[in-house]
Image 1 (cartoon, rainbow, N blue to C red):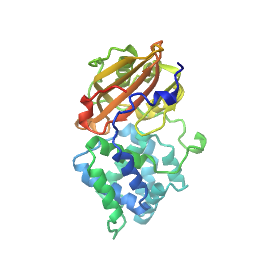
Image 2: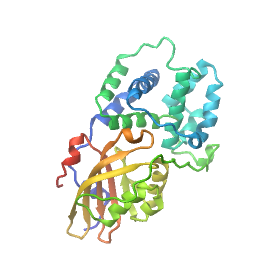
Image 3: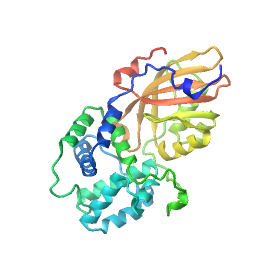
Image 4: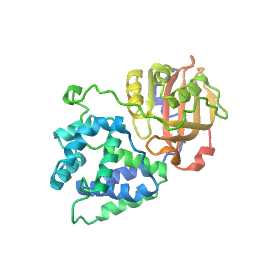
Length: 323
């Protein structure tokens, strides 16, 4: 039996993921530009009372410093236009530069922009803006999610802004080649992992390597044609692409698996499902995301496929079931 990405995606297909997340993001995408900016403002100020992002640190802000400085020197009308350009993904110099940022740098940019708005240095939502029914619907939908799910919605709304640079060469960006700074962990990484019901070396090694930001060690556990599928995304195929994703988006995570099940398939490969909690450096130890990892390990003990699923409810952490 040959292993394929398509068949791997179907293992433990009864894993319950929260359908409200893509639905809420779809509602956000339907808002006009000013409504999208208003949603971010209200979400930041209201939900920020219970979900507080961690300060990104000077090293990470260096990548966004030039854009932030330009925006601070603008008039309120110019600042509003820049934010509208970002939300509408317009082809402007600032929107292009933002489009080349990694996910973590985009989050750092919006964190600092929100702080500047609160200080009055950057204009908030346009003067005279009245919250539309659409914004109220998206806010109400977001408030129904648990904190970990809210993080995912807010992250995706920000990440998808800026000009789409996927078809542009890196040389189109004035700071191409700047290395993504590492998150400085405020607590020791989890160096030894134990999972009730799972002893598979590749799985334990993967979790331990990710908790140490040792992406080279994590990548070494994959087959050359292996794949990693982040929540609500398509599989990332090949070790080079997976390594790029890890360095840009997986820094500083604390993965805390709790229990799992392992099943040996007819060809000697193994499929495993593990549930647990993940903390991100942006929201610290106070907010955890309920996660399931679905692994397909080849007969030689290498990771062919791992999917990371956000669970629909905390209850599913305890509900490990067969395919």
